Image: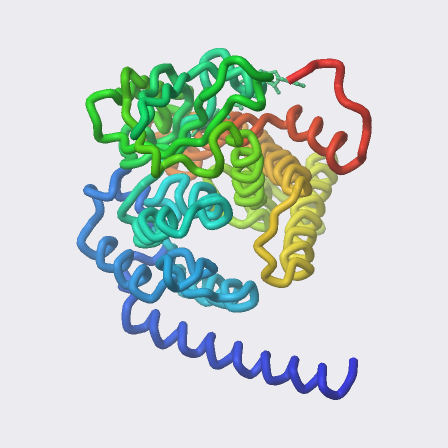
Length: 413
Ligand SMILES: Cc1cc2nc3c(=O)[nH]c(=O)nc-3n(C[C@H](O)[C@H](O)[C@H](O)COP(=O)(O)OP(=O)(O)OC[C@H]3O[C@@H](n4cnc5c(N)ncnc54)[C@H](O)[C@@H]3O)c2cc1C
């Protein structure tokens, strides 16, 4: 390293330390101890169900631009580079302060916002991004349909051009948070006469209108996080077409890369504890041998392999982030990390269940503690993580075609 580069690195290190100190002081002033480790989901599903403390914490973060810290300041972010975003996340993690804004904005901070930043007009950025960055406007995504899941381009929800607006008719399914969202980013057909990928557009439409109806779907885990969404003469303004007319396929490909990039944490469906703690759980349920090791050599081997996989995934994710050096570009490589993350999270759920034995299968009742009751729900919910955002098999197709350069599959779509 040259003397100039070393000096620049030292100066940046000093500046980062100063920023960390600023974050710690700000957290001491603004983050209430009562919210340590608390997410908005624990308080209820919608923004109107937040406690006054959570609402004040959300507003304080939004005011500072730290709800979506990497976004430009003019759209509600703080314009921070990767190193500062990471330092902010680490300091918040140390204080057990959870940023509620990405959770309250639904698909807004992680998916719709970055896509508006890339494809939106200046007017669209100014109109939509600050609401997302404040955590007050929740977005859902209307992509999947009863007959168009993995083969998304077969979608049939139709948007007809009525000069100054579009009229939308059709049905979406699995729309996460549709019943509590204010806006929907929907993929619609705008030209039926061309090849299926070429006649699709991305429309943004308000959910609070007579033409939009939602019906929640209940999951096996007991949760009801998504809905059927019906559009009956729903209205979308021309100003709310994102990207060019009939270019929605390119818009959605980018959005889905952002989605996969946001799903690369292997913390597990519930994200309750760190993977390392699994060894302690195992010792408690299975017992230890004379040397203090887990008293089941087979389980010990499998557990160690799992912990090594989890550590390798985490290090790879950190290396990719460091190499990107704050470059917000996402690529097809997000599919590799998504599959690795979901595989590890599901393996963790399976192992936890196996370790707990019968105690890990409780649904209710006083014979089970809170962790045991959560374990079976996490295991069931974990089935979904290799489906949403594109199934594991579809990610493998993307990896083989776009990264490895292998020939197309025989299935067209
Ligand atoms: C919890 C959850 C939340 C979701 N949230 C949303 C949301 O907010 N908005 C939204 O629009 N959608 C959402 N989805 C839907 C999700 O994107 C779809 O479920 C997913 O794309 C798969 O589509 P499908 O369910 O129709 O399955 P299908 O496409 O019918 O697939 C069935 C099976 O066939 C396999 N398969 C299909 N095609 C291929 C192929 N070419 N090669 C190899 N295997 C293939 C799949 O991997 C899968 O195992 C959500 C799903 C879940 C589980």
